Image (cartoon, rainbow, N blue to C red; front, side):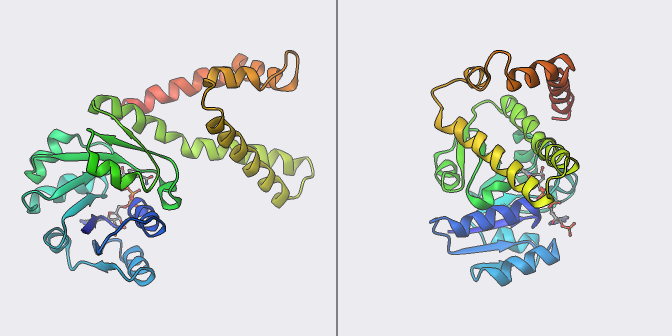
Amino acid sequence: MKIGFLGTGHITSSVIQGIFKSNLRINKIYVSPRNKSISKKLSKKFKKVSIAKNNQELIDLTNWVFLAVTPKVAHKILKTLVFKKNQKIISFISTINIEKLKKYTRAKKVTRVIPLPFVGIKKGPIIICPSDNIVKNFFNKLGKTIEIKNEKISKNFWTTSSFMAPFYYFMEVMSNWLVAKGVKRKAAEDYTRELFLALSQDSIYKKKLSLKQLVSESQTPGGINAQALKELKKKKFYKNQQKVLNSIFKRF
Ligand SMILES: NC(=O)c1ccc[n+]([C@@H]2O[C@H](COP(=O)([O-])OP(=O)(O)OC[C@H]3O[C@@H](n4cnc5c(N)ncnc54)[C@H](OP(=O)(O)O)[C@@H]3O)[C@@H](O)[C@H]2O)c1
């Protein structure tokens, strides 16, 4: 199988790193020349990665094409390119719907996929819309796939993916607080990373419990977790989280 990535930016780089950590059998990967430095790095690091001369050549040389440019660039370039009949087109683009993508590419079918940067370490949820067994089998090797039939529903997942930076900031605030209290930076960061890793892993091991049950299990009445939760709720921390989700949702 020969696959191509139109747009060689952050997400393409992560997906390619993931592919080479997986047992996916790919004969050849073509990346577009932009971004110059990322495409050069990838082709240097992986023998099977080559830089296509231009976007059209990338399409001509491949069976699958991943659309990994920003929406603004996609609106500009997709209609100028000629896709092959029966070419598998998989879009990572956040805000262009399937109908529009089909118009631009003149394809009968386009699948939208939301990989997140941890796909590079074969971790994390990967939304696929609409269901497609072949695409699912591919991404099953790179993370935990979740198929969504209705494109409108997938907008909710795009929305929640905006909480990566806020999540890390939450960790940073905690770590900075430890440093301000006299803990060495490295110990503070190590502790914070390990704490949140363990919490996430534990929630996966305890899949039989709902998240609501986990919240309840992790506090004792009158204890410090109960107090922290109560105070954050009172200060509308979580109400604001919901408000922000609603505001991001409007972008899709
Ligand atoms: N990052 C994520 O976590 C993530 C997750 C899921 C989906 N997505 C989606 O994936 C898409 C790419 O995101 P990204 O974060 O990877 O963005 P990015 O790092 O900005 O990558 C976009 C790439 O497109 C290249 N490009 C610009 N004009 C081009 C052209 N005419 N032809 C070919 N390539 C061109 C850019 O090159 P230059 O640097 O030279 O301009 C850049 O390397 C977006 O639509 C985004 O919504 C991203």
